[in-house]
Length: 448
Image 1: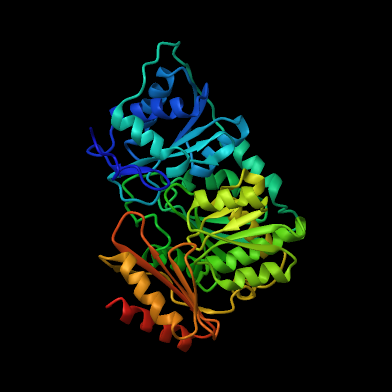
Image 2: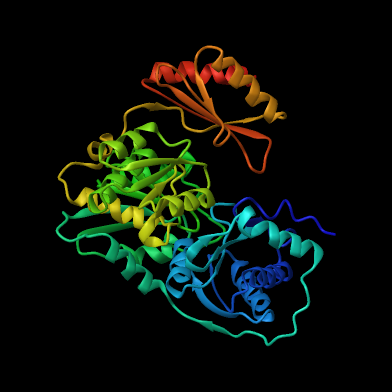
């Protein structure tokens, strides 16, 4: 029996091609997905990686073999695939490895209406079927057709954000040779927008920089271009363009927590009193701002399947993660960096203030950013850290990893990686010296 634990992750399927993931396995995954969903229709999108067309066609063949008809939407961002799943009301598969290096590929899955598929909602069952074998099927085969959904996707996003009457904006967009190079020209075409494109050429070898905007090194070109072109704002997308990061007019990155606060206030203006979901490493300023604007802040675990699940439970209008994922009820509770970008552009266009001033309204505390440390015994380490701080009067919770809140309002979260022996540390405090003190104290306990 083969072991696919290393390939099938907490939220998706991802590995190196072809040694971990090839066309034969993609075909089996397509068959298993059709089997567990029991669906007669599936839609499939693909990113620009060299291996993606073959994997998409193989997945489609597998779904066909179990009687499912397939709609191939071709080149797509992940949120375009979610749009297709939501609009067609069918399960979907996106062939992508997101921000991973060129040698990787993967598959993100969703049920009808872009509902999430994670370990507890289908991935574990797929893994078991692949390891033990699918039951026999003797019914008719499905068919495959193609449909271009790029323009309907762009048109739909524009129904969700009012861009009329805004001042002209010069916008630098770094697609990183990823799928934003395909979707941004359709979505960001507007009389008020002057687009300065960076790396719009689709190239799965990523010749200019990695497509992970969380890493500061991957924002260097965007920050420089914003300053060079005297732009109002810079946008950076990851490889499958479901995440967006923002740079102000000075070429300085804007905290995703500030973006959460900004978009939350806009959504609460339209939907007063609604719930807003944020994860455990988001600035506590976001929760304060939601409450001050009449909303209900709801804290959740990190990860799209958890955020989407809590949004469904609470009927939340918006959800955000500090990793640059933004979720919208009007977009089937799915994450879409492009819709987040439209909200920020609309907010900026409505004021004469620069983005640095606008975003500063939503920043209240000093943050460490994420710090990773290799830890062999994660449970024992978390217990040791918890005992140390709670003995001094701090409070602790275990919603996701360990969160410690100190009496002075500072807090930190230590969260284990899903795939590696790592602890991820995020610290926030009222000011920089306090943050540094807490950060160094935690790192000392970790032996770092």
